[in-house]
Amino acid sequence: MKKWLSVLFFLAVIPVMAQSTPTPTPLLAKWITAKVPWDLWFKNNALVTDKTEYVHFFWNANDFKANFEVKDKETRLAEAAVYLVKNLFPADSKADLVKVDIVYVLERDTYGMPKWDSLQQVLHVEFLRSKVLGGKTLPDFSVTAPDKVFDKFKIF
Image 1 (cartoon, rainbow, N blue to C red):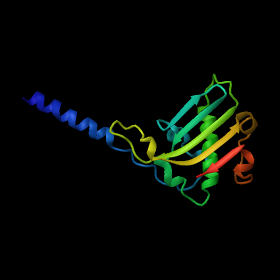
Image 2: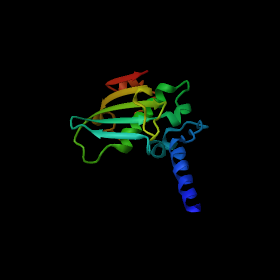
Image 3: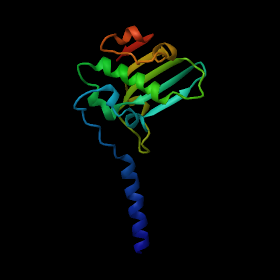
Image 4: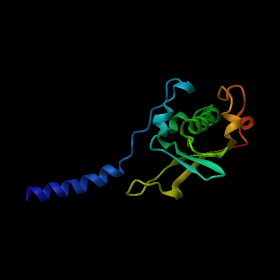
């Protein structure tokens, strides 16, 4: 009897654990681009697809939303797009064109998968990797506006 009760307990607890959402990252005290924990932020939240003619990056930034809902939102989102490509670009890809979509996933199903109709699009960017990341330094968005660096830059 105890054996069956423990099995039932685990069957009840595991779906509840799957539905729980991670605690959002608190607002960074000081935004220093090089010190933002990009790898941690992108882990388990980014999807990279090599479409042969371009590489598509899709990042759910909902857990880090507080860091982007600020006065310099445009600059921070542009930096996030650059670091997403810099850190996660597939080594074997031959494509130069990059498309980045940053979204907030507002709802998930019982399996933890995003409900696609609940996505809130935040940013869409397109650029040539060789143009933006080809130099020795990354773009400085405090000096140059993102729409001057990227081929397409749209905040929603």
